[in-house]
Length: 219
Image (tube, rainbow, N blue to C red; front, side, top):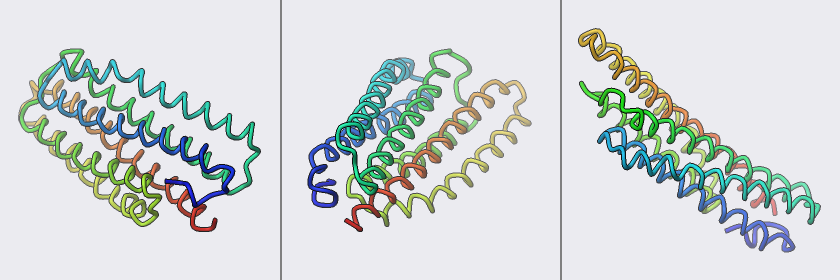
């Protein structure tokens, strides 16, 4: 997707790095989806898949870093190309953080705490849908180098933040009504926080896409 937008000497190498980050993004998006399903359905097998694939997420992050340093060391890129390379590496770092948050959600299920109840699963699923939409849109912006799509992601992150606060408030109210389910509510709060972080990571990803898109427009 980068070919034609940057220095001709970098087309192949940068396009390869771009594709690698997109592949990583697809894996992480699937991790978020699987972790959400694991928690809401209390599915230990799905949670185990998330935990097992965390190593693959880290492997992608390592490959992106290696390719980034190889590009810089061997090609001595001009400033615009360097900004694109660094932005792609930062995107991979945000994706790695999102993958880690997914693993944290899965770990709650694997630890076999209290099953979600009294609406906690519906709160988690609702916030997860918002987080996944943001992450998917951010990745679509990366795929097309679309600054406008990225700007929408950044703006919509406020909606997710508001829903996170509302979800915590509902958890608190339910805990006051059903004090015996405090542990369940606490676990749900941790899950909601992880999903809020994933929304932040989608926003940060979109910000880096804007950097790459601006480089492409000026080239």
